Amino acid sequence: MKSPYNILQSPCRLLVASAVLFVLFTACEKEDAIPYEPYEEAEVPTDPTELAVYNILQEYQSKIIYRYDRRYKSADAFAAPPDHDMVLPYINNVIRKLYIAPYERQKTDFMREHMPIEMVMFGTSLNYVEGDERNFSASGVAYGLSRIIITGVNGYDLNNPSWLRGQYATLHHEMAHVLDKIYGRPIGFDKVSTGLYAGGTAYNVFSQAEARERGFWRNYGMTNESEDFATWVDGLVTNPKEEVLEIVSANDLLNQKYQMVYNFYLDRGIDIHELQVYLQQILDDLEEE
Image: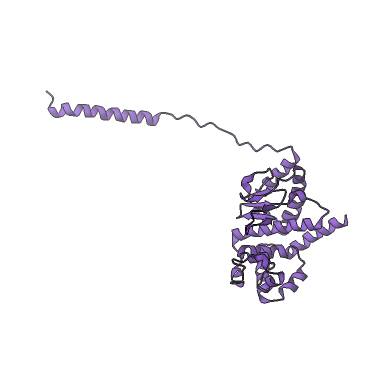
């Protein structure tokens, strides 16, 4: 005769055994195989413009966006899209020759390592016309190291040195912002003009002479330390070394910043004066054609 204990124990054993069998069954049940999907490279475009965009992406991991998308500008800014016919020559003759090549001829991998992730094109300037303190036109914008905005594409004209110089000045200005975000500005740069920035005053109330007295390349640099650094860069890439040295000899504030900016680039393999010579030679060659 089974004891009351055995009678109570049997159902428990049965439940435990059933649970173990269930776990073993489900644990050993084969999962569906994950289907193999071979890697396929993106199809190479046949359209010349798309091919130029594709090649920049493959070579520099930087995506050129030229189709209009209002998400790439602020709500209070107005800008026209680039004319499609202007995009290809702009990529070939401005981005490649005036933006990428000057760095690469000095240091081969420089642009592959530092190109922004996205370059967004607009046909005109970004115009802020709300009537407040932001009532101005922007020729370029940088968003950290991820994106720069290129404007004025519809003005593309290789026979216009002024337009070309303005374009590459803006591109190298925005590149300075990218490098600033990656490395930070030179140590001590922000302290040179402490207390001399425009602050709450609009920068354009200061003359060029007043800006230079305070250690700025131009008055727009008085906006903040980041623009101070970037305006020095666009100044150095658009002015011959002899003129730069004459300008910075005017006071110690200018000379300190010049040395810092020049050495910042030199430490990364770029002589910014050689970059200026190269760019100026391209303009001179175009004028002779």
